[in-house]
View 1: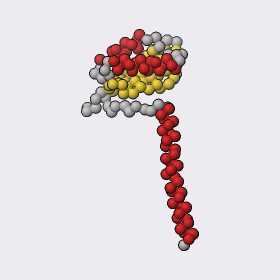
View 2 (view 1 turned 90 degrees about the horizontal axis):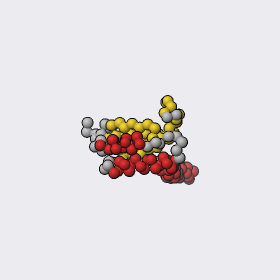
View 3 (view 1 turned 90 degrees about the vertical axis):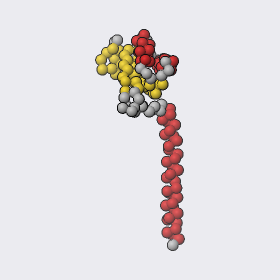
View 4 (view 1 turned 180 degrees about the horizontal axis):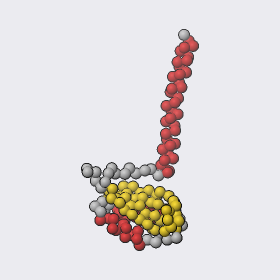
Length: 142
């Protein structure tokens, strides 16, 4: 048990709130954790999904996952803020014992990584083509 424990909080926001407000909730809960001297490991918006059963007459919800590392005192503060918010329809915090989560890049970062990978692939293909051309030229000279 050498791994240090961390916490994962999954919360569901109302589906009818605008995207800017979703971003403000992400920032708001990350700031609450920062104020309680807790390290925020990862914060991901999982998107709008259908709920297994209706919650407060909502059939869909916007799922958000928040991973944080601290002494455990921050959980009560975070869950109290979620309980008071009308936009949060469900939340749960689970203590995890295992390797720390690696932050996943956002979609904009994914696109730039893909663009950067494509030119390097072309560069690796071109020297191989040049070698084949040189080999074929040497064979034709002999």
